[in-house]
Length: 219
Image 1 (cartoon, rainbow, N blue to C red):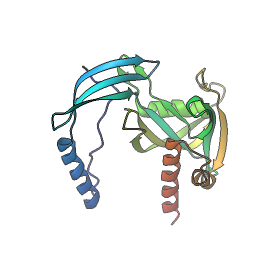
Image 2: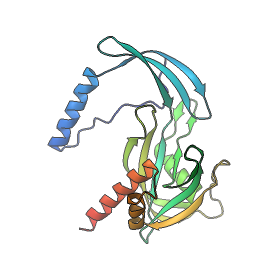
Image 3: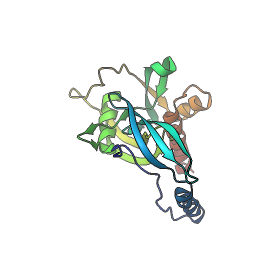
């Protein structure tokens, strides 16, 4: 019953901030006291890059239950900020939501021979494929799970700056992607989040994190 290469565990790296590190201590304790052990794993479906599994889990009190888990290799999300303070976003149709969504550029990590792609490599690739731009600077901001209740998908958020057009040798979007590039002042992007125009969770998280950073730097 091997783990998928996409599986990872929560961050427990000390922050150097006493209050936050005390929260980490509490989480480490909960890792043990609330731990649930997988005793059986059964694949229900294997798609192009997703696997749906049924896990049989034993709680600390000895009770068992079944949980469906969507195994995802992980993804990257791009805050591509140009020299005029505009964010590069993309509009694309999303079948599960039955409509077009305005989102930050993002993409799934490739998996080859059981090895998951380096997120930084994926970040540069996805930026170019989805926006037609390259970045001379790419900074990791943070990482987060999209839906830890049922999925292993872990998203790594990058800030891409010093942008320039990719040129004639640009990497093209995937065949199943039809994207429209939108350039939006980052303040307008925040307003779009607050007004419910942007409803995509990863984009909401990324835009608000960027706003906090830029507002702090402006003080």
